[in-house]
Length: 451
Ligand SMILES: [Cu+2]
Image (cartoon, rainbow, N blue to C red; front, side):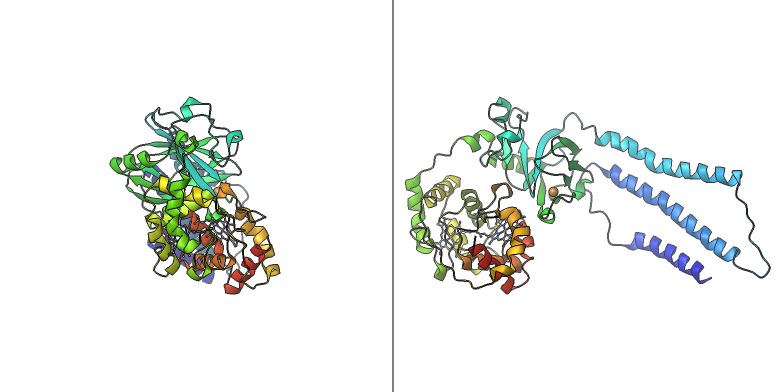
């Protein structure tokens, strides 16, 4: 009897949990409401089956329970019962799966007016390519991939010249404009998922897979890789922002074309030197840094990384957290760099600075963190700590150890890398949690000092 009650409670509990649970789909923001309908249909069919089978078991447990003098009868065949069971199961499964086939046909057939956008996934970041004025994407090949051409666009293909390059994890889309996402991976399997769009698809290295959707609600949505793609998988975050037509047009106009990124930006070292005059009061005339001012050494720092930090300081993506005393000192300084070419110039000038011998100021036990560095940090910052451009991870070997310790502390405390637009910072923020306390941070910095 008690087993019957347990079963009934289980059935009732499951059904109630389904209807009362706060965990369900995120609000939908695309044309794919059919996905939700098929899931609901599956819930109804399997739900009815689940309740019927369990209630039947409860019935049998009670009806046929052990009684003095009653014996079980052996009835191996019952054509009538089996026909009914087979028939009902067939109807149930067909009802559940058949609508899915029609919807799948729609999933694999993008509409004619869909815009094609390429999504490039690699361990562990996202970049994108939009067709330029000609409406066509140029040819690509991994053999063309370099730090200056991260998407591997064929420089001889005229269609590729005006392609818009988004070397950043945030992609903007226009509301009510269907989009076919062409999915390309340069390393391992990844997956393209925007939960609010309801459709998702794997990336397979060596081929271009695709998925399409028509975003129909303005908003900002997480882009997730839902394929376990290595130790940094959980930190592979992106974002899709759905804009109205006007905002979208403004955003696209701001993005560089492939030709823009290839024409060696004419940098003006003299202007850069003038721009650096202010910087030198904290970062030193030789870019050697100044511990008393908490200003890091800039000499030897990767250019792309430096430009990104300066843009982030300017836009309030870094150096705005209320506990970020030193970031907030730096942020207004970045405002003195009026535009992209001012940033370009000052970074070019900093690249000519000699720096100074790095002093070791942090005491720690390098042996205690060597294993963690090699298994985790090295994946992005390199075995030698010289940075890996494909994952946007800067070199660590040209940094002051006190500065690294400070930044790791800030990442851990959520002072750096928590702004919505700071997805690389978020990535490092998640990773910084592998360092459990200040001592672990010091041990790690001591290890990096040995590289
Ligand atoms: Cu991935």
